Length: 302
Ligand SMILES: Cc1cc2nc3c(=O)[nH]c(=O)nc-3n(C[C@H](O)[C@H](O)[C@H](O)COP(=O)(O)OP(=O)(O)OC[C@H]3O[C@@H](n4cnc5c(N)ncnc54)[C@H](O)[C@@H]3O)c2cc1C
Image 1 (cartoon, rainbow, N blue to C red):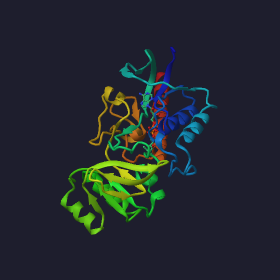
Image 2 (image 1 turned 90 degrees about the horizontal axis):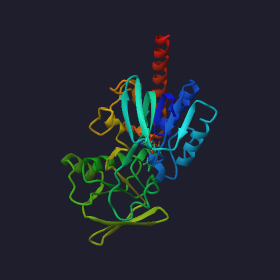
Image 3 (image 1 turned 120 degrees about the horizontal axis):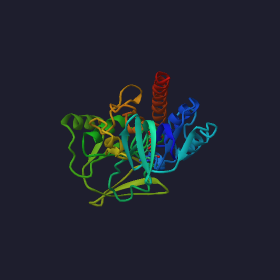
Image 4 (image 1 turned 45 degrees about the vertical axis):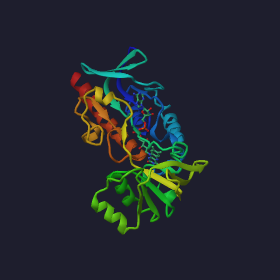
């Protein structure tokens, strides 16, 4: 491929595909590279996306890719980008030893969640064990729910979940390190704190049934939420010299611009509100700014 693309988009999740759609409609020559590990792959249903509430996450992406087909200047590749660097007037990316160039670069590479290391959790994750009440709290409304977390993030999540259920137990899997205020508030709300080590989660067909502690105790629960952090899915933003927030998100400004000229970062990789509809909106915003910048450059060159 000797073409210099107007834009390379790394990541074909909601943020990347949404940007590709806008840029295709702007008649931009776009390459989307996607390694295919979208964040919500373990989930059965995507909630909170207007007109698509409850759709399978993979189906949303399939429709997204299909709707790019009418735009002949948008090219999709199912490949991982392993490296990138800034060059004069643009960027170079590496895909399987092949180097491809573009004038602008959009990273829509997402994040990966740190799953608690608990026996039995993986088969329940995305079906009755979740991290985000906004995504999956409704399905567990008024149900017995556990919150996993030893630090303030765990107590904070428990307090947040009171909007969905009042049958809550915080499991810290070892000594809790909550602030005194949080402990008082949990007690006032009758939210029990279990500090015993967890042995395993039990359930069937993706449905959590009980939490078993190392001391043999068991508590019945229909769902569990955790808040144990996340990491960038790849290191391309770091390699390009982006700044990060204290929570590990790429720091972006207006229209998802970064401090690196011509580089944009959209979706979960860059923001605190991590919802598919927000990721798609950020991709669209970035595409808008990218196209404007390209038009400006093209007109100046004439
Ligand atoms: C279990 C679970 C349930 C969720 N449920 C909901 C819900 O109900 N509603 C909701 O709104 N949100 C939900 N979310 C959040 C949602 O998944 C994210 O907000 C959304 O996926 C963010 O989109 P994105 O495009 O930024 O990233 P992603 O969807 O993660 O897509 C990023 C893509 O970039 C690719 N990529 C990364 N690095 C490279 C590279 N170097 N080269 C090539 N490709 C690369 C990845 O493989 C991936 O395909 C859920 C998340 C989880 C974990």
